[in-house]
Image 1 (cartoon, one colour):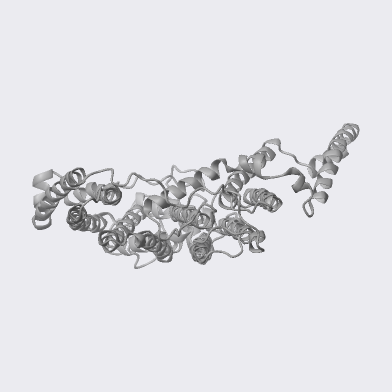
Image 2 (cartoon, helix red, strand yellow):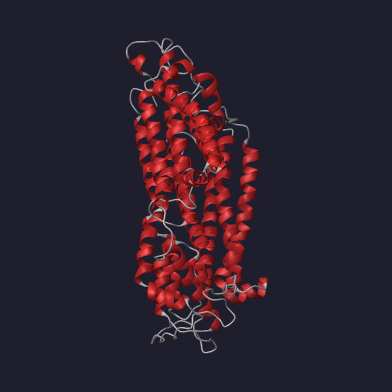
Length: 570
């Protein structure tokens, strides 16, 4: 990546300062610092206005794009042109921002947020003045170090921005600053006078006091919370922008790492021990592959499904830990002779082959587990994560083990972005709901309470299922609690009409109506495509859903279903 160049340098000035600004460009640096501070304060105010809701939606899309726009706009002012790598990294950042306005899943939004944060960090690293190389061709350790520096600067950079970079005189001389200062001074003078005379008038006339109280409702706690959230967001954004655009010229992504700290003996013993351990585990798994349910029950005392449940997540953890072990061994190995590199590649390759068998065992366990207990969001995410890990290990073998490690980071990033975007397209919550509803059609049990907790993306499938079942309660129930006649039952329904099953359906119907019905509150900041689809689906089935929701056991309070019995944990 080319070193940072500002506008003054493009006109022939010589860069002599450690920060990348020319020696006669101190005013330009101070002006840029003032812009950074102003943008941080603006993003703090906008963030407080947009994000003070219970859930994310289009608000997060607008705010994250605002941060990215501020970063790139200031970078254009700081540099002559944006590096090509920065433009490439900005594309997935924008795509991840748009995903918040699509799906409603809280867990998926959390994954999107983590990926967006990491991607914006990569954009910042590609722009930072101390970044002298490409992010996408850097080593993993260098990318992690650059991310750590960016995080440290985000946490504490605002102090340097306020007390070192920003010139108060420069700020007051900026365009429009005099008008803003004049307005602030006028408010500081007018507000106390209005409070004093207003309080006297309110004490003199109760009618005026009531009108003033209706017009001016000041909640000190709410004002304090707005100030705290605005200040916290502005503090972090200011530190982030300052670290990216006004860095002190530290070396690029490359860091001093103890290369060659371990000899061949240490690395070969460590990896060889893991190979023996993995091989012994694989030998046990092969017995279960051919022995089946009977062998598992005789050996472990568990059913095959319980055995599958107990082992899957542990195997996912094992798979995730192998990668940092191999990367650390590759970085620390002292390659004094060709033999050292050859031994490492052989041991790493054998370990990857054994890991492939273990990962296949994990996938087999998950398929068995889902056939018994159905699909859940956590099981789906774990499966997708392991699938992505398998792809990363293949890429590791094709790059690092073949001496082409500079391509590894780019492959991991692009595969991660692609997997996350594909996961959003697949609609995890809706997929789980549709899969379990289809499974219930074969006579299997369906946990409607769990589906109702998955959010708007699962609502269409759940609503269709609830209204496709009998709309009348079992025989041991009384008439609806509101006294209206019982609705006729639908013919050909396949749902279980037991007391507990209908109670769970009643609870789920109430939850759908409360969240996505015609009476549910809406906030444009939380709007997503998934929520809009959920509202349309619930509206299409609202009469039938209200019929189901109107019933309750004889002991239930009016218009209130009891919580359904706890679903089996599986």
